[in-house]
Image 1 (cartoon, helix red, strand yellow):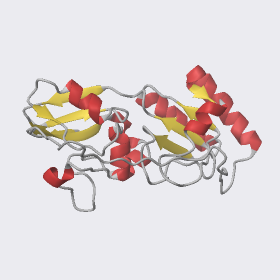
Image 2: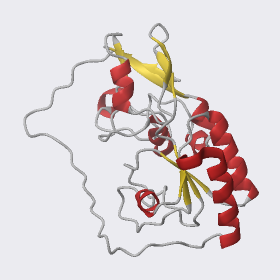
Image 3: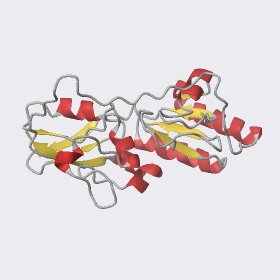
Image 4: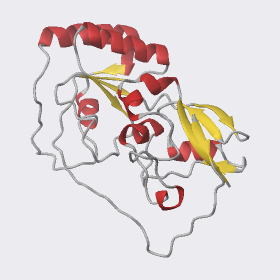
Length: 226
């Protein structure tokens, strides 16, 4: 569920902006604390490809892309990347990962600064960006329910002409699932405030729920009146 609020016009003076640009050298050493044995990885990859087809991939480009976020931490790639479309697929991916004793790492847009998406122990990265549906909008209740891969920009586009908006903006086209996982807020928090514990006042799903993939059934978000 997402809470919606009246949406005032925010104007920034010319030249005002926030830029965070962390460049990683292509030669940076890859880091892993440990790796699963090859037999378990091979069994899991076979099962995941049987489930998802081409949406379970071990291509080098995808492993590299999912090895780090925008932080300074050295990359640590997973063993396989999955792109589920439904809650049921996520459930099956987690079951397969548990069977072969592989870690699971949820992945949104990869724009965070905490380093939490690096696969330090290898395992299965679940990229939730293709679960990007706005499931429900209730203007009367000032809330909405979205899938974890919906972005702040996408949600506000869906809310156009409704008189409400989602006002939390961490400064990147982050996913709502990722914002929940990292308690993202941003410059607009000066107006909307944050909840006790640091999480954004407009996102009601707990951080731990996203971490265990429980929130893929729908993230609650508070909205503001326009």
